[in-house]
Image 1 (cartoon, rainbow, N blue to C red):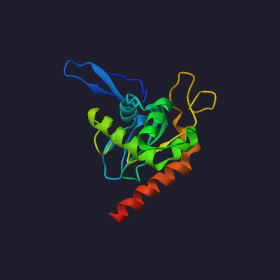
Image 2: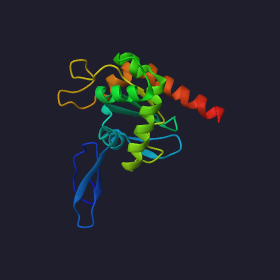
Image 3: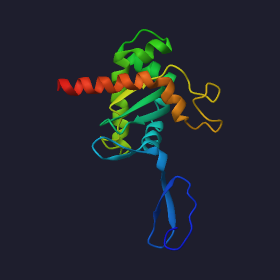
Length: 176
C-alpha cells in the first residue's frame, strides 16, 4: 500500500509524474549496483548495443563486487567478416574470427564509438567483451520463445568466460 492505494508487485520500476500518472522506466531484476555504488541498467545497455550493426545479440553482465560491466556478444557474421578483412585476418571460420585478438580489439573500438553516440556512460560501457561463435536460440535454451534473453542459462554456460574477462580487467588495471 502506498498513500492508501493498493499496487500489484510486478518487479517494474516506475516513476510518478507530476500529473499523478506512473510510467514504467525499468525492471528491478535488470538493475545492478556496481562496486563503487553506481546503478546500471543491463537492459538499457543491451538495447543501445543491439542497435549497432556489428551486433546480432548481446547479454551484459554486472556483478556488485566488480567495478565494470562485461558483455557476451553474438556478432553479425557479415560485418564480422568485413572487420576481419579490414584488419588483415585471413581465416573465415567463425570460431577463429571470434577468437582473434585483432578482431576483438577492432570490435570493441567500434562498440565504444557506437556507445558514445548512444549516450552510454563510461561506467555502463562493458570494459571487456567476448564474441560468441554460437548463435543464441530458443532451441539451445539461451533465448525464450519470444526471443528474450535467458540470463541464468547464458551466465551458467559462459561463467568461465565471464570470470576470465573480469580477471583480465583486474590484471590490466594493476599494470597501469
